[in-house]
Image 1 (tube, rainbow, N blue to C red):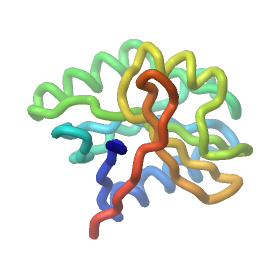
Image 2 (cartoon, rainbow, N blue to C red):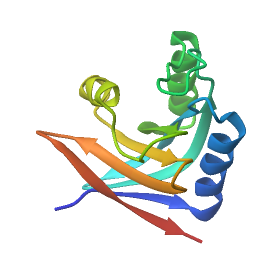
Image 3 (cartoon, one colour):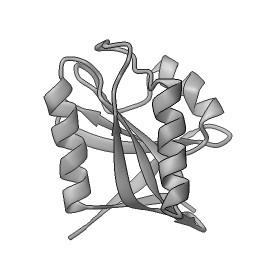
Image 4 (cartoon, rainbow, N blue to C red):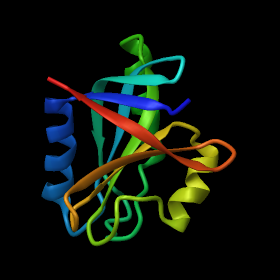
Length: 136
């Protein structure tokens, strides 16, 4: 059964605006929410800074990651996803993304500035697409 991630229209817009604001550098964020069976529901977005300041890679500082996980816990939520943008390429995992997906087994949401496209993926035994449902 295919995994699904649910975003509100305003959450989707926050992510796209974040990607456009930082282009041509990759933007990044943590997605807080709850996961039930094969559905992850985003409740809150925790925007982060790309410390690499790179158009092809992103890194969230350990301090910001720790703060994000503490914030999620304080709100009774889990980190259910990682968002980042690809300013100049497709909205699909790069070889670098694939390596980091192995140690961060959550839904990865990727926005392509070049193609104005939002896609999601998860790495289980292989990389699989995740259905994105947008709610009003």
